[in-house]
Amino acid sequence: MNAIPDGTVLDIRNVTKAFGEREVLRGIDLGVREHEAVALIGASGSGKSTLLRCIDLLEEIDDGDVFLDGEVITDPGVDPVAVRRRLGLVFQAYNLFPHLSALENVVLGEMRAHGKARAEAEERGRALLARFGLAGREDDRPDNLSGGQQQRVAIARAFAARPRALLLDEVTSALDPELVGEVLEAVRDLKGEGMTMLIATHEMSFAREVADRVAFLHAGRILELGSPEQVLSSPEAEETRRFLRRIQAN
Image 1 (cartoon, rainbow, N blue to C red):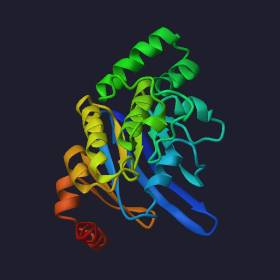
Image 2 (image 1 turned 90 degrees about the horizontal axis):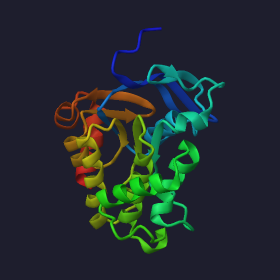
Image 3 (image 1 turned 135 degrees about the horizontal axis):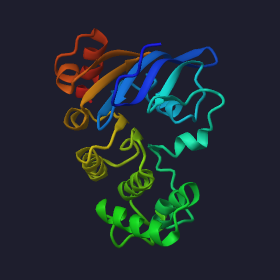
Image 4 (image 1 turned 90 degrees about the vertical axis):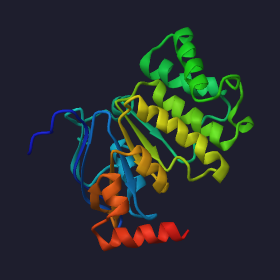
């Protein structure tokens, strides 16, 4: 096995995944370096969300390996809960606890998984909510927040645990268009701080602005990987060009 390059936080090697007869991931190879943001683009069904779920051990891979800080995390003997404490996954559907306030949603993981005292966790939680534009909404339950506000709570919750990497799964796709910008601004702030991120997105302008590299997935494979300028402006693969034309037409 080739050595993992220095500074690599996530290293994905020949990962395959099928659901019954349907192959969703067909030999994915991808490394994400410290402080790097990599955007995953591709049509629905190309494997973006499945790849993120496999990294977070919500789906079991069929073959290959995923390494986090040089340690294989996809071995059956690895504790998935311990791995998830080192990763932050934000879903497109928020997945907040409806009976808890915004602040309680943010601090619960810190207290339960990381053993933080309530006072310490709440102090950090209030600071994070304020940072993401939610000062004064700490006691509101999700039903009293807009979709954009709920998604920002979900990002604050993932970031509260100080993850080694954030996995963002189409975090704007469930939002009304006028709410997309506020969530993308929160992600831009994290990028500015050097957060390591793997981002599945259909927002091409956002990928161009925030990502260090863009990976185009097609039929379970990475067909193209490079800088945003190269992949989004001068793609080499015909499939990439066809995908971008469809996106621009919409």
